[in-house]
Amino acid sequence: MFSVKDLLPGGKKVAGVDIGSSRIKLVELKDTSEGWALQRFTQVSLERGTIENGLIRDHDALVKKIRELFKMSRYGGKNVIIALSGHVVMIKKAGFRKMEEGELRDFIIDEAGEYLPFDDIRDVNFDLHICSQGDNDSNQMEVLIAAAKKEVTESYADAIEQAGSRVAVIDVDSFALETAYEENYDFATDDIVALVNVGASITNINIVKDEESVFTRNVLLGGDSITQALQEKLGISFEEAEMVKFGTPGKDGNTGEKVLDYLEPILLEIRRSFDYFSSTVSGSSISRILISGGCAAIPGIADAMKDMFHCEVEIFDPFKSILYDKSVFSPSYIREVGPIAAVGVGLALRRVGDS
Image (cartoon, rainbow, N blue to C red; front, side, top):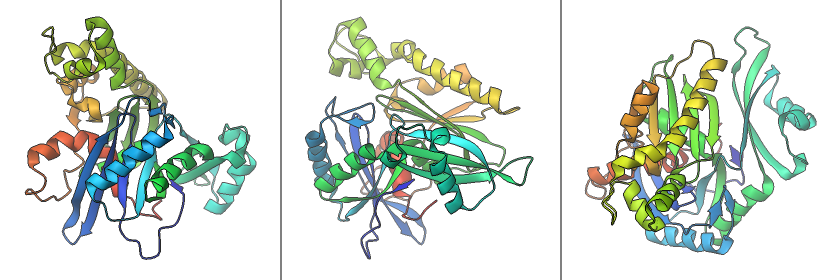
């Protein structure tokens, strides 16, 4: 979405770097004659508090971890594509009279108070995507606008540069998921699919119809809220609560099955989002949910969502149509890391100049 800099001359290598609040992931894909092929996937954990609510709180710690990521992955390129979290990005869909993109950008800047609710438009990076013309009026079009403060985009770009690389494009995590989905899944034009990414501190919801995002929402609840609830309830450490969350018996014998009770607040927020979408888009119902993010590994989460939403639910597989060397990446490893690699795969599929 946000093109920060041009790629270096002749710089063809690019990797997707997904910077979350609990870990950083790097994905590199190669475009071959047989399709996209996985070159490398590497992840490093991030100390709690380094990033909070999408904002960098400990810049030096983040730079250190990104350097560690590059060293472990042996990524040889200098260019990366990253994503901003829904915490810090404003996403808005609005209707406009039909006009050229340049004119539209000028119009949005002139009318910034209506479309970009920031104090000073000069402090904001924004991008837009023209989705379609209005259903009933050929002189109208729908436009998706994404905006973030420059200090946020620049803080991430600076961390990447200090670690020895450079940012080519800054995307949005929800839209990176959409890119991974479109590359890996077959769908009919009338399919309405909810891409639900349950991360450590935020849950991203992107509802897609006919290769187009029709609804997005970010719920400020994620896996850490489950861990903290387990920690308080069971009187155990955060690390022990993490083990319980993912089905490993804790010292009191609890298993992951009981975690589903703690998952309910997140599921209720997802349902509120779906209900709002259905109320605003007449006759639309979600046919399938794809779950990604760290919480996709919680035992029973897919079945719990099936029971609540009464539709097909599956774990997002971002490597479904991606080739990989089984002597380097075992199928079991690919299945294990798939849900947490989804955003990174979407970023790695991007190229500078993409709309």
